[in-house]
Length: 498
Ligand code: UDP
Ligand code: MN
Image (cartoon, rainbow, N blue to C red; front, top):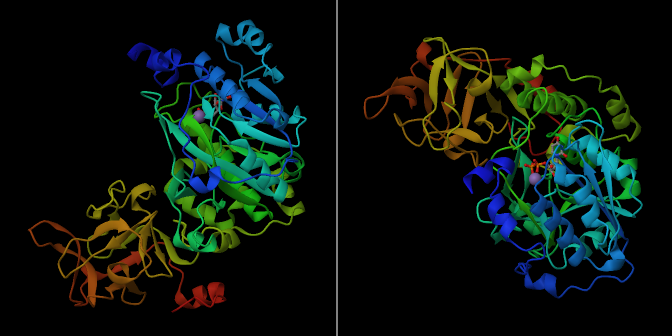
């Protein structure tokens, strides 16, 4: 079992022992089971790209899609082999899909291209009204397809994802995903799941069977109207192997007039892996940085600074030519990233209004605040300033928080430790008022100043003490925007409170 695990980074022995048409629990909300969909839904082509996928997971994806889709809604399945070198994915695969009741076509990339260009190839060959993308290790559950197609029929600019259930990489047990999480991202441009915020629950008036408007998607599983896929600019063909394409499409869809939604009545399982089984020609970091840089350059305007400053390697990567993607943004008259942050992702880790971004340096010790690897609920540290971004990047925001990604400096009492807690935007222990002349951070609730000093318990570190004008209480913010400039830049919004 352990040997086989290494091949695909999941329990291949377990997968091989499980039927290709195994039964799955019906994990839908009761309100979903009762829904009735129109008879005249658009049909779909399914596109599955793979590089060296295991036999049983690939075939189970195909069988579950065929067995659990109304025959008239599933026009065809396109498999795109991204230059796999396993023998069973050649003739044997061709032979075993020939007799299925849905036409399955296999396209082969001449050389390893990555999932983005492989999907582009598959999509270009589709004939369905809707394109549905799936990873090669998925399982479709009862009723998965109708709600996706119904939403696309209702609004052709809705790009829709199922709830992605978890197929355990260890046991292949099927576990329901949550309808209470949606997609976001952090300063490193990693896709992350976050709780669906209250404002979105309110918008749906508490009806959990209605679509969740999600800022980003995981990327592997979604349906899109075929003509809209073309219109909105398909994918960025300059992206390699894996990564970034999901955020690129998420930003593009929202900024250019579409919507991205999780259809909570549709459930599809996916084997989530902890490691990647395949190689990244060119190096994993390089490839992902390149893809992310392309999307940041095209879609994020000045907010790309958050990504660049925290990941110094990104600035050195050769990201090729993005002029055609910028021309696309122009042609579609897409909105700025600030609009996306304000309207689609107000709970983003990237503050829409901020005074500074970069290191925070103590005047007396000449050392910098350091988040010590972003561990929640741990003390913020200080170290010699290294100017390499990473753990020494903080943003002082218009909400008066000192923030690093999703964590904020938080202190509850005089001489207490300054810890990193999830930003809550409720002021309280997380609100600091910066005085640019004195360089002080007044901790508003305790009316004391951020300093480096002996903490209760005897250790030495950042804390708050009575303000005494000492240089230990003075801090220099990198690229601090003076208040007046800031006001000119941002004083347009009514929720601005300074
Ligand atoms: N894939 C591909 N070529 C690549 C990398 C990935 O065709 O160079 C396929 C892979 O086989 C899978 C899909 O793209 O079907 C998504 O990749 P993966 O499952 O590794 O991504 P994850 O789900 O871990 O994000
Ligand atoms: Mn996958």
